[in-house]
Length: 477
Image (cartoon, rainbow, N blue to C red; front, side, top):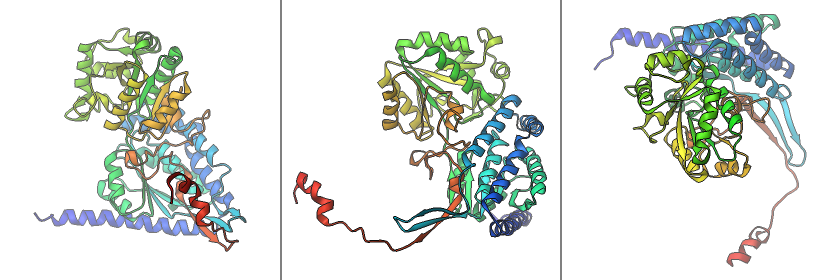
């Protein structure tokens, strides 16, 4: 079947518009790099960050984000925009990203930081402000230009954000072409062209976009799906666990891929923990209302857009369910009846709904959690509330997860927190388990090339005996 000439012309025009953007970005980036100092890179990063962090702009943009995407809530977005960006600035403050960054006489190697060039960043509608800002800050810190590809729902607020960035750039004489976004209306053809022509891709959001990035021919950093599962064992502080889980699950109406999608509770404390969850605002639904909620949430293989990332009263209303003490409810709990494609409640829900599984003991909990992650979310993260740290180590040794979050509110901890040592990020690599090229939190260090000056040193060549002596003693020659 032949493609109509008008469609071909439109596609060609869209590709040409992206090519022109990339050309301007390359020109701006080369000039930025040519006259660069570490101070200049740092100033650029701070300018982009302040565009969002300035309190009145943060509030305005958060309100606009919720209004245009229909996802999350304003107060939490303001907090997220502030804390995530502040955390990234803390992480990069003393990092050297220009010129010689390491010189080791013992190896004869000098390392020089060099920019990637033009970064293409695909950002999700769930975080239409914090994610692009953090990507821009990291890119500029390392001397790059960056082009954003927002979701259609997030395009308008992203455009507004860039306007504020340009106002800050003007204060310090930065070229606007260092940070651009693909022109509206956003389309797959434009995003695809960006993927094909940029020097590096950073992709957060749908797995379809991640797969397209990996197959584009451009080096890509993609992140895997989240489906966070958290174990509560018999040694846990149940009241503290319930409070932390509630705070995490409800933050920004569960837009985070790091919010608790499943809880696995050992039988010995199951009933007591349900009581603590109820005190904190979690409402366990009976079988009839669980069934009604599942039917409303999962429709034709997709999550219901009228429920995902919506306020709890809307979730209850759309689902037409009865909830005990609904006036104090913060999120809903449903029984986990199984794991796998035929049990959609075992996957990510992006809503104020969590699936509850009962385990016989810790070993059974570990098995259930591993099965849930194998179904969806492999490599992302797992949580545990426990007084026995050896159990956290067991999870790290046995479960396919790149992060084990211990006794913390999961969505605050996974992407970096001021009280843990993880880098601040909104993009979590999931390693080979999640089909990703990185297994750590995406950060500015992924946006540098390192040139190595290699000099001759004194030889360090072992004998064969030095290497094989222990092996020969064990196995023979």
